[in-house]
Amino acid sequence: MPRSARITFCLFVAASLIAPKTAASGEILTFEHSLHLDVLHEKNMSLRPSADTRPRDRQDRIAAKLRFSAEFDPDGPLAGFVEFELRRDIDDRQARPRETGTELRLREAYLEVEDVLAPNLDLRIGRWDYEDARRWLIDARLDGIWMRYRGERLEADILAARENQFREDLLDRESRDGDTDYIAGLFRYEINTQIELGAHAIWQQETDGNRDRLRLLGARAQGEALDQLSYWADVSWTETARNGRKQRGRGVDLGGKWQFDHPLKPRLTLGWARGSGNFRQPDLHSNEGSLGQDIETFYYGEVLRPELANLTVLTIGAGMTFDEKLSADVYWRDYRLGNSEHGLRGAALRADPVSGGALGQGVDVVIGYRPAKNIAIDGAFGWFEPGSAFAGTRQGRAFAARLELTWKF
Image (cartoon, rainbow, N blue to C red):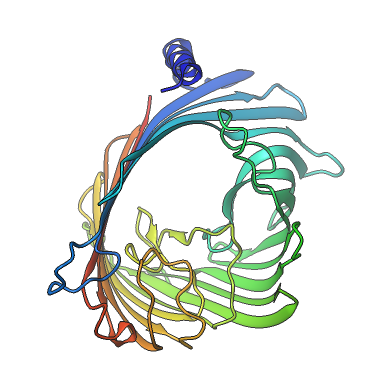
């Protein structure tokens, strides 16, 4: 570990020991700190069949992260927030030398002004973490300006930013790549306590020579149709311009969860999503969130983790919460690929389909454990069985497992 990183680590540990453990009401300056451990194991992502004499690929990635944040919130319109993350990454891939790295990331650093131009209108400037309601559009830390209006029923966000306009890693001068402009408007309106409607518009343009761009318009609905049924619906239209060629696409994501009235809280989940071959999600999305359970999973599978483009995904899930600490869900997914010329975008697989049609099926098991209020442990195991779209050369099963631990101390 570099000397500067060791010094920073010692400072973080010292701050963790002397800083207040909780934020008391009325304090102007408060501190928080947490430890995170993320482990990802992937096997046979190239889909080699068992009869193949060559060894199946394997990759393990481990990230240990120590986060420290400080919030300045006096009795007035101006507030501030800063959060650093010291992390150690290990990437061990079969037949390759192990790669390690140490980073000191500036996760957030912003000033916020309340009621800046009108009542209930706040302005945030700097680097901030933004997530839309489902992280289907945006889940990223951005550098720029964020304005939010909070009315009694209406909430409106206006963003003008770049990703990594400034250094992401304070130890690496080359860690900035802010070459894409983003302008976005996201709106939410609460009809009543059970129905919420939304609309969004995102404009994305590269600042390099080719000037590629993405325009996205969409609508969203979520809420409760019955006492035991919750639902979500996303519809978006995109227009992309790459190398002077314009293309239009459409994406749809629909689903619902039925929660039974029982001490074990059994639930059933049904989801259906489809993206046309030319549909593009913004480069800021993560497609990770809740499908109705208390813990998060990848909407389109723990193994594939694809972008919703040229793809149709059917999801059927069931789960239960055994007590306040432990919950588990099982998801079965069926994948179908559209036009083979568009391929499979953004997937974690290292194998490309050769035709459209039956891409394959997957099964995921997602488990959440909360042994204490300040400790969260999430685990997931996924299997993917390739279909005829991979032909006979890629018929081996892929496996992925991840573990995420968070300790707020």
